[in-house]
Image: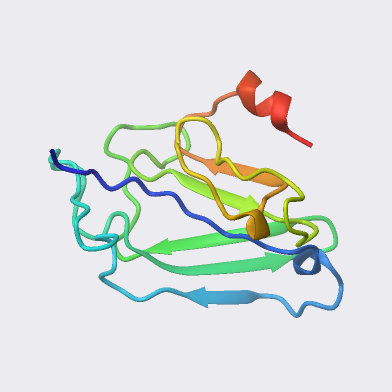
Length: 146
């Protein structure tokens, strides 16, 4: 059975990311053409999933006095073939933030549906889900939120 590539973008950040001492922007480059996971993941067969659609290439984190901004780049331009109201209909982006950097302080299970965990050292406190269709926070996530 083919395994399909699921884009789960993971960033584990300590509380210092949001502190005054960090010089923004933070830039993280990711190698190009590494969107096959361990080499066995394949894209779904629908033609809207073009090679590079899930190939993350760069993340830029910036901040001002009130907000933190994440700019995420892929190898190919983001398209909206299914007409989502937010202009993003193929990729789903998950950002997990570890505010305190303490082992076992936070959540290890990713949000429901991902069926994955992080290590105790990387337990997270805040999860951000970005997709093309606005959704409400599910009750199971609300009940586990700090």
